[in-house]
Amino acid sequence: MSLSGISINSITMPPTVIMGKTDVGTPGTRVQLDSSTTPLKSGVTIKAVVTNTDKILVGNNIVDSTNGYRLGPAETIFLEITTLATVYLDAIAAGSVTYIAS
Image (cartoon, rainbow, N blue to C red; front, side, top):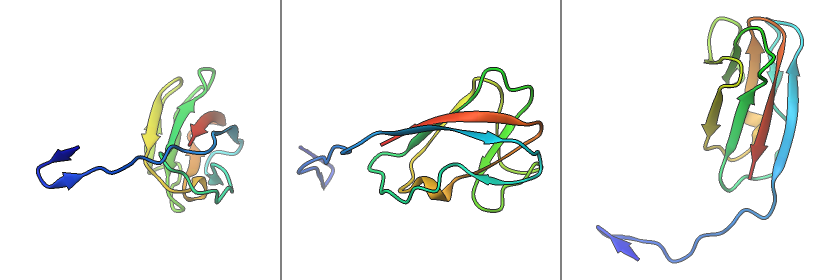
């Protein structure tokens, strides 16, 4: 297939699925989504747990309770990243996220 000079010869499917749950127990204390450095082919979908009482903040290693992408209860975000270890979380109130990556 060729589009405007772009050629796609093959697509490598992800060999595995990684999933889990991460708790942010203390607001204002950044936690890593997952310490896995397993290479991802696609990225990760992160979903704030529906029973959270406030926002979870998603970002890099400088995210805190005043900056980051805010996820309300049951909201999701997809990040096209190469490893889970690059994603960090903080919270306005203690809460959790679930995630699935490939």
